[in-house]
Image 1 (cartoon, rainbow, N blue to C red):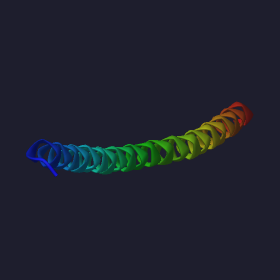
Image 2: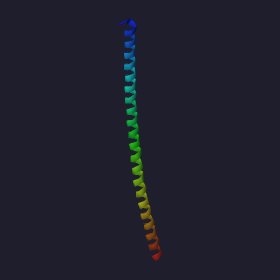
Image 3: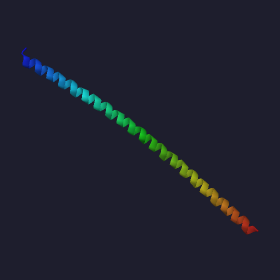
Image 4: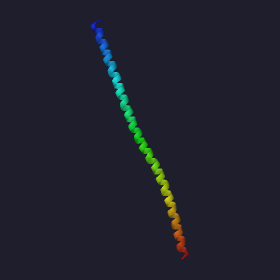
Length: 79
């Protein structure tokens, strides 16, 4: 084979290795970023669920306070 063909084949091989290596590295980086975003979304969803339960508890406590105030008012009026 002539020198030109050998150099062209080496160039092709180097280009393929570089391209495939870049694709693999980019894929790993993208997967890492997606995993980090999934963790953030899980934290956010957990916060939303906890706030929902906290709001329910606050509403229940508000009702208990209203009932207690009505009972106090009824007792004060009976005197």
